[in-house]
Amino acid sequence: MVVNKYSILLPTYNERENLPIIIWLIVKYMTESKLDFEIIVIDDGSPDGTIEVAKELERIYGSDKIVLRPRASKLGLGTAYIHGLKHATGNFVIIMDADLSHHPKFIPQFVELQEKNNYDIVTGTRYVGDGAVFGWDFRRKLVSRGANFLTQILLRPGVSDLTGSFRLYRKEVLEKIVSSCVSKGYVFQMEMIVKARLFNNTIGEVPITFVDRVYGQSKLGGSEIIQFAKGLLYLFATT
Ligand SMILES: Nc1nc2c(ncn2[C@@H]2O[C@H](COP(=O)(O)OP(=O)(O)OP(=O)(O)O)[C@@H](O)[C@H]2O)c(=O)[nH]1
Ligand SMILES: *[C@@H]1O[C@H](CO)[C@@H](O)[C@H](O)[C@H]1NC(C)=O
Ligand SMILES: [Mg+2]
Image (cartoon, rainbow, N blue to C red; front, side, top):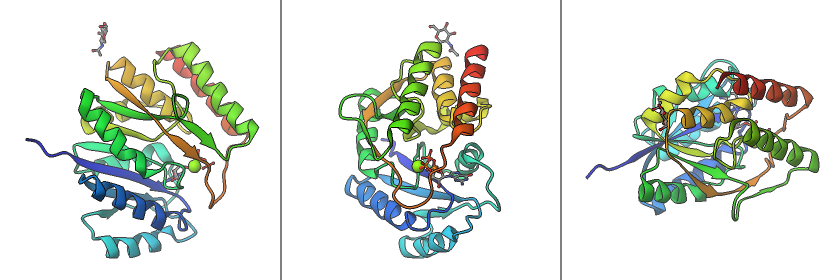
């Protein structure tokens, strides 16, 4: 029998308040479910000193569980995933945000669904069943819903939540997807699912509740929305 190992990629930028809590929760739920795992923290030189907190956590939980793979400066989420993936030793990879928007209690549900149907990918969805978003204002909900709606119409990906990033991947599947993606910013998550569909990967969905960050600054502005629209049109034109 093959024993699965899960590499959890945790990109951080100014998450010193959130990191100890998210890591404590991940360790708790993975241990309770008897799942083998490692947490790869990719910090991009956060000015708030996230890396100091990460080093302390590495001492507490051990360097086999907390793997630090920092970079010198803020190079963006897409390349942070690629960087983390290079160091992943598991046969499955989980991507999640470090700002407590994604609750680790859903990971065992992702794993269970993957095992049951032998999926290549399991994605969290805020838009099906018990899934939900908390803490966003009307404008942000509208942007997220609108982006999903537009994408559903233009690209027909067959997945209900395209802009979310809380997902489980078979490692070789993620490697193939990531190396084929060209988008930056918010479009990146969406392109990953579109590419997965092109490669005929099988995808399962688990309803998740998404909670807006409590600590730290949110940065969705007009320019992100325009970037998103441009990226979406690009994907539409090229796939
Ligand atoms: N390593 C790295 N991590 C990043 C970078 N940008 C964001 N992150 C992290 O990626 C995750 C998602 O980023 P967020 O800033 O929460 O993005 P968001 O959820 O769309 O927006 P808000 O939560 O509203 O700010 C968080 O864990 C961030 O700390 C980056 O350039 N490099
Ligand atoms: C995906 O499936 C479709 C329909 O069965 C097929 O035409 C296509 O070649 C497949 N693509 C890949 C990359 O395997
Ligand atoms: Mg966030």
